[in-house]
Length: 236
Image (cartoon, rainbow, N blue to C red; front, side, top):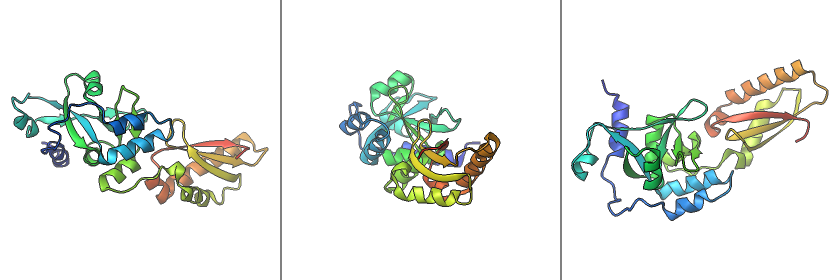
């Protein structure tokens, strides 16, 4: 039996669209956003997604004969990809060239970024992967949710209030004397922790376990941060 939520989300993607004259080339806003250096590249891509057109790859079991049939084909299915941490993301492309290089059999459906974001919250794990195979940008879950809701998104590492939230969550862990939030290297956020000098390895490991639990249990951090890593150091 088909999943009603999946069918509803797919139907939204297959709704008539205003892109009849689109030649499939990469919009200038996305070209500019992808040229930005990390870590600012992801916020730039998110900003371009607010009003920009992306192409969602859809695999049709039965190939439609006309465009009208294509737009109403209920046998079409959206595609997802697995990201390194095991979650699923919905791939979207900024150009037809990038899409066909990734999967020549996929049919492109042009949609606005917020429409794709809304579908990703239902068809995947709330992640968008922009241009997989072509300098991909993984849009984190909080940004996808904000796009779907029409809300502004501030990267957590650029939000000064998040440092205060982290400090409150870690209060009481005496082995830690400070914390700093910065962009992660393999995660969205890295929390640099200043530890008391001279700690035994066992005590440091225990402090890291308690810090991980404290941050994972914080409701604000769960909403604002998609993924984080801890980096203990004697310097902050």
